[in-house]
Image (cartoon, rainbow over all chains, first blue to last red; front, side, top):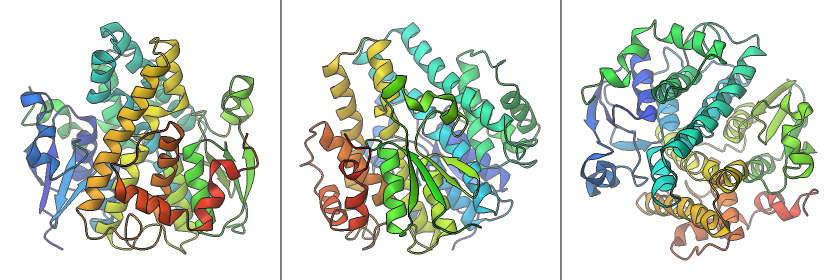
Length: 220
Length: 220
């Protein structure tokens, strides 16, 4: 294996999936060579041949390490946790790992992909959804997901300062970017006091703050 | 830990996420106590209080083991692979694990949730999408995803009889139910020869065949 600093990350400042990977790298103290893929310029640089060769899904992020290009933010973060085990982003016990993955996947499968740029575009261009329709759509899926997460966190004594215990992990790495997306569309987050408390704890850590979209070199 | 046979699975014959878990249990030779959650009857049994207490997302499947309820099919399957390691559904090497997880997540995040019952209902009831609109929507996201998967599998020598090598694993566990969904809406699968070849290999195994929707006790 190459040096741990040999990472390259294809991303975009506003992508919440890239935001997850930036947090994970920061938590592990890993530097990455950042490669910017502008999702709006030139018809979307993610659709350029050079990027398709790296990621046939034409989605970001992609991590390159040891000559392998890895797409899908959760696959990337599990990989990072396996090749650079400390600090761990998943707990050691299988039941606890399942709980953390369940929270992460509830965001990564059931909230985020529904509100992705390509989906919002399809709603607009193909189904004629206007700005209000699309805002309602986003709020619907985020609030449905956040309500379930708030309940899951409230009813489990393993919830601590973060989603699982008192150290940040995979679940928080997914939650904080999703909350940033919710704030960007001015959602009311008052119904989710545990999520807000965890968000506040996260932004007390440089790993989360430095990963924010507005703190990236390609931010506009 | 309890005996390995101490599993209960909440599912629905037609759910492709439950289909994934059924395959994983079968591959590991594990029996589970099946609990049927009818997604259409009584306004959707997944919304009943009794089930919400098990899974606050009101989605299936949920696996119960050792008193813990685990939602999210990929969290369930990773858990099964950790508590019952043989036969392994993920390879041992981190780079290979990342490849398998990338394929699984490309389906579980970027194809399946867009075509879920609750999303198709929203398109119909809130956005006024008719049957043709919804069929086009489903085909669009499946064909976009399958085209990327076909490319990923074609360009990597690690693709074998199955998505990764010659034994079935997590990627195949996600792929086969998604192909069943595609066939259910009569999609043209000719453009995906590798996917079709893997599907044929999978259905040569009783673990996949026994897990099919039409072979479930709650099938209609």
